[in-house]
Image (cartoon, helix red, strand yellow):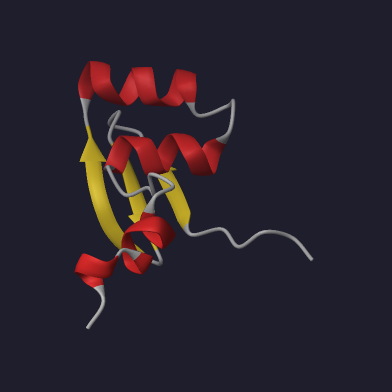
Length: 72
């Protein structure tokens, strides 16, 4: 079963790139930032889009959830 694709992007003819997360716009890139993003997105698209939008997990969510201070 393939991994879910949460992020998607659309490159427009005017040089604008719109990154969406679950179908909703997450960010819009223009100019040199859009060009850098398009160069970088070929490596691992989901990870790159998550990093550019700031919407990615840092790997400590389970540890933080189980910490006594965060239990209710």
